[in-house]
Length: 115
Image (cartoon, rainbow, N blue to C red):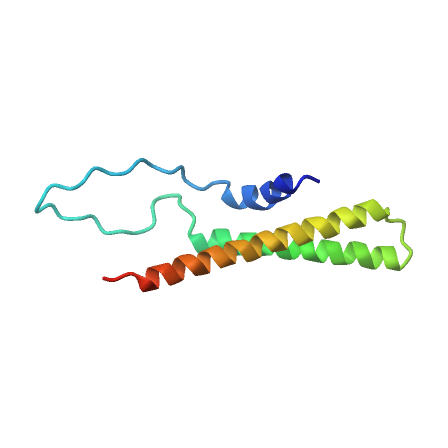
């Protein structure tokens, strides 16, 4: 399996249903009241998307472990299927770690900003 397709398999399901990115809003005239910020209609909270992403990585890890267990116990599981499941789990876990690292970097950058 190509590494990009493995990443797409993990990220695409998590991103389905997300609202399209809208163009920037023009600046408000002086003295106008700002609308309160909050979730938009139909938007999924970031927590939900991230939680689903972690669940998918976990399910790939469990499927990989089950495939290895089946191979070692003598079940009729082809070795190439076990290797594919193991690599998918590995790539999706690496992607999750990189996403976590980027989120942590972004958070640290926000904390360093002067208000």
